[in-house]
Image (cartoon, rainbow, N blue to C red; front, side, top):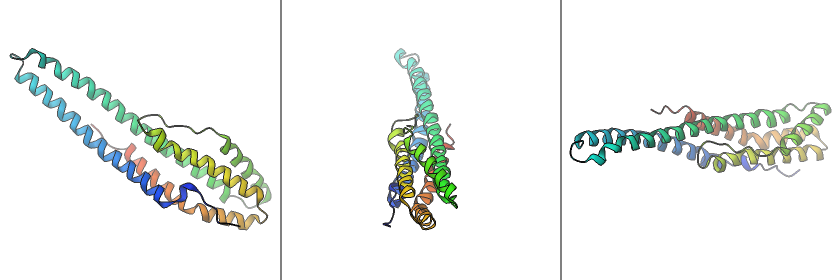
Length: 194
């Protein structure tokens, strides 16, 4: 049997996703601070010129409205990260769990049916912030294709024990990667913004 390759098991993919999430987290915190600095500056400016430049009086209200929209966007991004954690957890526990639980022919038949159902599902794009569908949605799409690949391998298998062992071994880097991505998303979801 040839080595089984899973797209998400490649360490470079994991590193890139984790780096993207960390960068998103850092940039979100910096942007949040900048927005609040602008709010304070606009109020100070309006107060300073309230008698000379009447147009400046409207500035704080406009900045305040923008800051509120920005905060809604950041909260949605954190919510999207939380859903990303759930999506990865579901796949990790369901798909890899089904493989690792195979001990008998009945377990094998059940796993094949379960993987077939998972592979049929439509990808669930994550809502919340620009790029969520692209950055995190493809993990789910990849997960569906991995489920289909595992189902096919199991159906064609003649030596169940050896196949389960090889599948478990082939998917080990992905399980490790899922842990890293889940942690990066979890940290971002818990980011404390003002």
